[in-house]
Image (cartoon, rainbow, N blue to C red; front, side, top):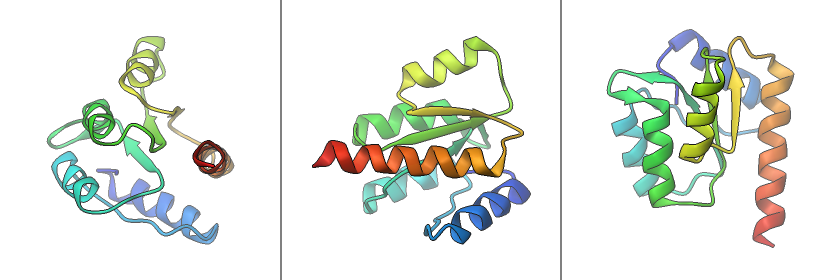
Length: 119
């Protein structure tokens, strides 16, 4: 989930090159609709959307599915924002600008952990 088209394209490109399928959403409302319809392995969530904050999505998604990894990506680096995101239920918090390799490592690490916890 990302409201910035350029950043969304870049994230999709990075993850597609690593073999991941990426579904994009531009609003929290659209993303929650998708969560209710399908199963996803992980969410990458930006901090701002036209209809709310990324942390709002994290809270709503957690109320629907407590197990799915959620990575919150934000330009806000203060401990207050990081704490809010993690307390809302984010599995990880990445600060923009984020290195491509950091995104890949975080996603792979969370997916591996998720698979191991399910076993």
